[in-house]
Length: 291
Image 1: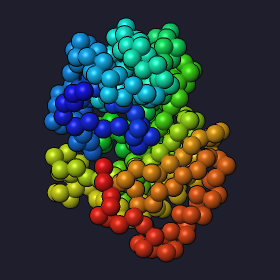
Image 2: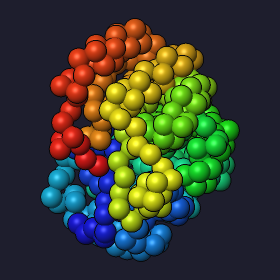
Image 3: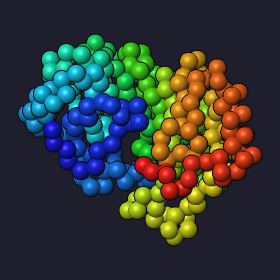
Image 4: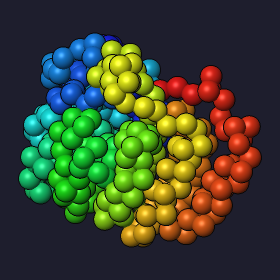
């Protein structure tokens, strides 16, 4: 198995086989993200991908889950994705699910028939970075999609039978837009009604545009108590969910939470209130946080 540059995956894919099918991110302009600054977007040669699958089959034949990296494997043609998924199914007889990151444009560019075909072949879950439900913030961070576009993409994915995991970022609007960010994010996620919803906490990465904005005083970070307050507002405004697994288990977060919304909404809010009352001692030490 061969990897090029920085490779990341969602926390829930910790035990998955990570297979690079593209390098980098086709958008790669988000001001907060430094993940793929080390490599331009590129489609990986299919022969190399198939060779890696065969190597992985020898090393980990009991693999049950595979995650397609890098940033947006769905930029590949449906034909190429089917070729890869079919090869994975042939190599791993116990394969249960294939997952990948996705952005709004790649999902919207696939036809309904293409997405349904990918689901039938074995694609099971997509992870979409909403970051914020606020179009003002999405524009500031150069997300490359509006909240309405991302909502449409999620609805399209769900219609095809995909599980959808939505990711938001606490603190991405700074103190100035904190309440707006929380309210809009909770409302948009409610409309999406995803299977999974997780929140990360902003950590500035040297070399990114947002880090430079912070360095020269154009952007300010939230304090830990403000982050918890923002998270509380997000949960309060998430009123349209039916059966959503909620997590803040990413290493960047000050307080790991888990529950199901809406069933555990009151408990989650009470836990946040208790943590705010206890102060810094209730939170993950700063040195333990990471990306």
